[in-house]
Structure formats: C-alpha cells, structure tokens
Length: 393
Image (cartoon, rainbow, N blue to C red; front, side):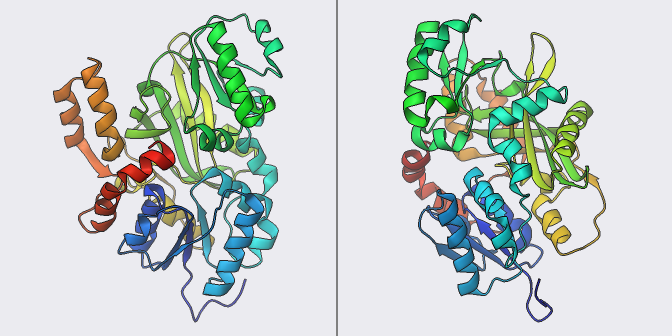
C-alpha cells in the first residue's frame, strides 16, 4: 500500500441507489472523500457528501466490472481507497479478482474461498445444516421428470440458487406454486431463464414479512465489532419481498449465536446480513439468505448506534474500534415502496390505516429523505417510472 500521508484516503462506492446513498452519507459525515460509480441512474451522486460521481458501462459481468473499477481507479488516482459493493454480482467480481484489485485498492470483500459459501445458496444451505442451523426444506430437480419425487404438500417457492441471475431476468425474488401442476409450470419457466441446475424448490414457510428477521454485523476475526438484530415489519412485494420497507431493531440473542457460528465457519470479514424466517410450525428460525455486503436498510444502524460503513472504513485504516450493539426499538422506513405496498394491504383489509400512520410516526430513519441532504429524495421521486421499469421497484 502506498504512502497516503499527503492525500486523504477515500471510498469508492459501487452502486448509487438508496443503499449506496447510505454509505456516502455515513462516510461523508466523517469527512471521507467518496466517489460513486454506477451503471444505472444514481441518486447518491446528488448527495452533498458525494465528492465525485462517474457513470460506467454495465457492471453485471464480473471480469468487465473488475477491469472497469481498476481502470477508473488509475484514471482518478484512487490508490488506497476502500471499495464498497452494493450488489451481489459486484461482491463476486471483487472476490474473484481480489488479488489484482488489492494491489491498488483496499478491498474488504473476502476472497472467493469465503464468498462462495454465500454466493450460491446450495453451498449456504449445505453448510448451515452441517453447523446445526435450520433451513427451509429444499429440493433440487434436474428436469421436470424429477418433480414427482417431491411428495410434500404445496405451496412451494420456486427460487434461484444464485439470485442475481434470476432477479435481473424476472424482476422477482421467487415464484409461488400452489399446486404440483403449477410447480411444474413455474419450474419450466425458471429453468428457461437460468438453467435447471440453478433452480431450487423450497417449502413456503407460513407467514409474511413480519416473520422475517435478520442479523447484521461488521464481523472480524470470529466476532462482531458492531451488530444489530432486526425484524422486518413490512416488505415489497408483500409476499416475496425483494426488499424491506419497514424494519425495527430488536433484541434476539439466539440469532447472534446462530449467525456468528456460520460466519466463523467461513472465516468471514466485513459487513454482512443473514436473513431468517421464523417457522410457526416448529418455532425455529430458518436461514434464508446471506448478503456479503451492505444491505438495503443499513442506515438504520447509525440511528441505533452502529455506523456500519464507517466502522469498516476505520478498520481498513487500522484504527482501534470498540465493540457496539444496536439498541432495540429504532425504526427505518423506505416510504417510496412502503406506502404503495401498505395501501394495497389496507384495501385488502390486511392492514389498519391508523396503525400504519402511527408506525410512520415511530420511524426514526428514512431510507433517502434527510433534512440535511434533501436533493437525493427529490430526484428519486422523479425517477419512480424509471425504477418501476428497471427494477420492478
């Protein structure tokens, strides 16, 4: 690593949506220079805390993404800067091409020997089961002819082993199948999109987003330096939520124990979120997903006393950190998706209007709006049609 005494070390944030915006604000409030790069329309570039923003070609292909990042680093003289990915395919690119990137940047993303356990859910579930973590019952069919072997009762969730391939193709996280006939049809459609080897068939655990929980941490050397546990109160879409829309911090030591067992097993370093769903049939928290990066609502951490992006940055610069845990009872909302989803639930009679409005009063952190940095929220409102088409919101 070069002598950086003459020039402040900054951060390169890859992805400028609301998640990237949260990183920009976290670091900018500590006077860290931040450059945002994105292959989509970015709201983070409009933040008062963004030092620079660069539009780049597609970042979905891993080798191309790594080359783009390295080329940009040389052109903008970003040597020694800390890289923050916001999407899974970027995590994979940084991990697979880490040796070349780490010669120029600080790359907190672990190497592939660690990331492979969370990139592919087949690996995730196998290891989780070996470690004694519960997971939903899951089947892997190589062809439609294998489906009759699944004798469990519906409903099922048809979902991908590698989620980014499926989400970009379908704008969905999973498809529901309420019968074996529907399962056959959904499997065929999914296999046509990503190949049958990447299709998983999973039992659908009863309950909506309120049964989903997560453990979030900055993890280093087998322990959490900063952590919080949350409950997902609402999500969008309501059934298979691609993203949380209303989240609350809680105390749940069991999830800390389970999650840290998994992270120690893969020698994990960095920011991470482990998602669970509480199964009311047996009372067990079942691991759904692991995200080896910041997560959508990471800015909730700052409101609860854990500034996740800055913890990582400070550690990368060799600062001494004191362990911290997020306090319970702090709420985060992404109003641009929460309000439409809630309106639909209210019309269906599954959500009370006044209870919803009271929940908004309790929300201490909004995903984009900030009185000290209002422009990104104004820009995002104008981008609603674009976001609907590009990402299905």
